[in-house]
Image 1: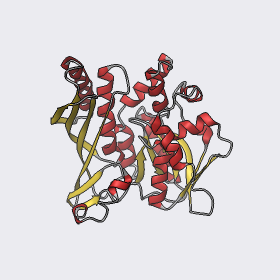
Image 2: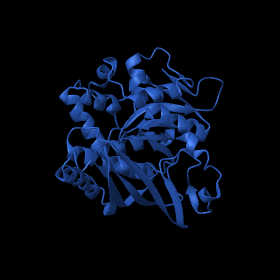
Image 3: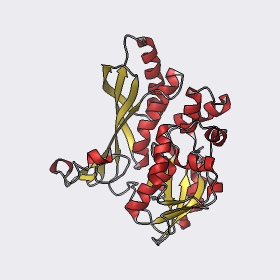
Image 4: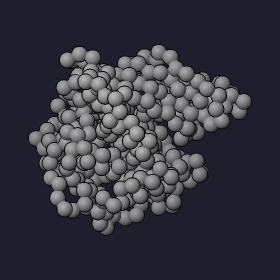
Length: 325
């Protein structure tokens, strides 16, 4: 996809003085300024089923689409639904169950469903285009991390391997339940805490995995990172599932994409897989100044989220951009 987008980079259609964040960067959503104190945040995301229950699929799809707005420090306002449905194969009642699950999460996010579009398709797909707002001076972006910042992760990893194992009949029920609960949980509280604390650098961890999204931040901010492998939060059973070979294709592609810029050291193979595992509706990865760390971690935890301190950022040097200890 990056090769396709290169054709648009620099094109006049992608330029505007009020376009604060566009396709030239690697941020989670686009940001368009309306006034000095108001900007729109826009994103879109949809995918095929990754769980068996239709309602859970809808809940996860909504949380995943909303996450890009939260990752930018924004507040979701409206949602447009995207539905591809094999009408001659699956009854519309199943689609209604998917939508009901999504509406539950949109309601929790106080995000208004304003419409959408559906098509007849051989494979079911579902998701949303989300519009939110953010103050132009309070955005969270990929390019604002600084040497000395500590890295805080707000959800455990492993949803990709667990979802794959579930499809292949190899996931313990406890692992599947933990993954669904994680993917369905909104990043709203953690985002609000970060914005209130003045955090300006971060992303969410989704399809490119932890190391892929971290690499984007490092490139944009011109810093390097040291990760404490023992501090990485992992969903129950995910490491064993990875060891058993239930690894999605996206996770394998992620490893190939980052292996040249990561010093894995003695990191076990299963943990390497988890570090690049393609996540759906993952947590936020925040770059936090040392002076703000303790207060921010305490506030995130008080809001009911995880706040794992997994590493720190350093000035560029001749070593690998990412080092795992």
